Length: 415
Ligand code: AMP
Image (cartoon, rainbow, N blue to C red; front, top):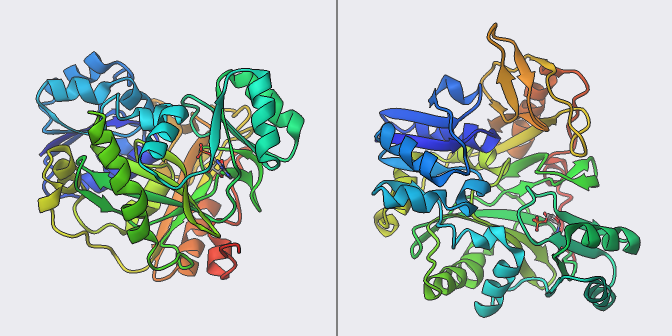
């Protein structure tokens, strides 16, 4: 199988490692890729959000499968353009990707499918915003309606902050606050059959103890020792299958990766958000434990043959990833600093670039992550932090408490 991977972040580096490790893959291309991906794939240049350009590249490299990592190309319709060339693509159509591209569309689908989620209003002016904030009370949850790379959401007790964010965004979704630990569940689907991966937890806030602003994600771990045993089955029954059925009914079947972001509230799991692609950095830990060859699984989803795919096999133990972020991230990351100690197994590149002389430099807010497995969560956590300790990058920061509460048995479901 010849595979073209679209994207160039940490998620794509993890996907590239999984794809390259599948014996069925004879050639792996990545566009644009990154210096970490370059070790396992041939890199090509492409404008990610240009459907015609990505489709042309897929034809040029004679791809049997195109895997689209980030949301922006999906929302731009890249999967449609590749499919139109008769090439199998792992990633939903532009229409189905609106599940991520528009919070209002996602809420509408959830309402129609009776999926448990926070009550919400879409608001376009100050009066509507004020009314919604009054109804739900603090903590206030205000979400930009469009794509915002995980950073368009403000959760705050400060009414003025909530109002300012709403005014800056224009069209927002204001919703009821959901309390309880969060879970990311990835589901591989061909639109009808659906296979859940291991649930993971990520850490959205920049600082230890979940303080500071939201980010794209500062770390993750899997599996979740505290999760209710029937969690995945319940979410497949109450969320995933009804959502897929509703999208089929609307003529926009969702084939690709359905990311279900959940809060485990006292009254059960509630959907916080859907994404139309693998989450970053949860992909790093989930794929670290997946033993089933990745390309075969994604190809089955891309070709409508997932129901015939064998059950997934998982490695024993646990995986943890810790993100190293650039000075100033998330507000204003500084780039161009030299990185040392990163050319080792377990270091996943997210925002890096390499000079002609081989020097590695930071090129984004989330620069890299240390990803490790171990026989249990405590061992995986120690190993991930050992990787991160050996990386030097001026001004960088990382959370010191990734997976700590889970290791110590301190994650509890309220109520
Ligand atoms: P989203 O982009 O919708 O995933 O939101 C980003 C983060 O904001 C989530 O991971 C949660 O930590 C938080 N969040 C979003 N919606 C809610 C909600 N209704 N209640 C509590 N926290 C939320």
